[in-house]
Length: 491
Ligand code: SF4
Ligand code: FE
Image (tube, rainbow, N blue to C red):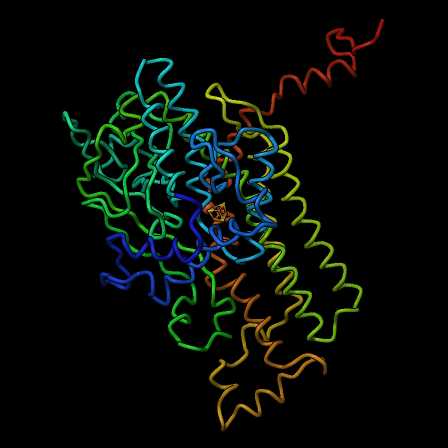
């Protein structure tokens, strides 16, 4: 099958029997639900752009597995150029949607599981890698969206998986038989899970022998028996239920999505099991997935940042303040921060390397620096956007008031800004900034920047593992003459 277009992707979701709950009720037709649909539109954009000639090189890549071009979201990175194209693709999609477009978690999981299964097989003569290749071929040939699922609920953070009061707080194997494994547990905060065809499950942290039942990786289709998804609420999400009041949503066409993903005795056949109790590889898989996803943020958040900077510049124009030097300076600062994030995403890609399995992974230290910056800079960019936008962003009336026969005239009269800008356009831009910094899109642009791909402390631990502080001390020792050490080139 060739690459799917956006409509085919949306229609393909209709064929699944994904069990979705929202506001306490089962949503039979989740594809057309007004709160869910914008998030589907975002994933659909990953299909739509892959169809466009001008984006072919960024959105698609040649797969040796299928002998065809595949969507880059299903691709195994073959070079540092592939890694950089991934980041460029994510920036592009952030610009086009202004939200989290969700499909990257699968791409990052695919690349992490590919290289890890190869190394597990080397050690244990298992057949995980060959199984995984079969799964990946199926994904590539059918251009599927894969949810990469890692984060367990974790219960008491002070206890390992096997010592939790409730064993299901970490996803685990409850039974092994001749057909496969049966698993129980959940994955929390699952980006794009409702919009995915397949789910690639990974352990959530490094494991010890006592936790080996929790060291498990496998793939399941979205509508496998025993899977339930409970949709996550987002700030201001019910504005999407207000019919044609698009202005109040800020960005009515696109959205992000997270869900609680429950596994209630789900059966996984052996051909879809990619790690089963080899606990010493859980940490490797986690680090590789996290590294890729920390790189990802140097693309997607930058694209969304581009939208926010643009909206802020428009708001300044609407206020008649665009020429003020401090406004220009703040826009420069926002751009500087945004491009710094992009630089990190590109740098960790450019310094990537080949894995034993043959795909490419990023420079892990720089990917962690990238994500650490992402935990901060979007907040500062958002602060500056709110500074320039002004308080009207959160005090303005609803679109219904602007449309009202009784008070609409007052609204349009008193919220007029710079003469050439239509009042309603001014309101739309302010609502977009509200959406990005306080509304549904702020989940992706701010909170996810903090906690997605690991919270800030997770990156600091990884930075401290790779900083080579002893070598840095030696540089200092040589220069100031401690211990008689000499600098290079000195006689
Ligand atoms: Fe992709 Fe960014 Fe969303 Fe992660 S947060 S899935 S990298 S858009
Ligand atoms: Fe994320």
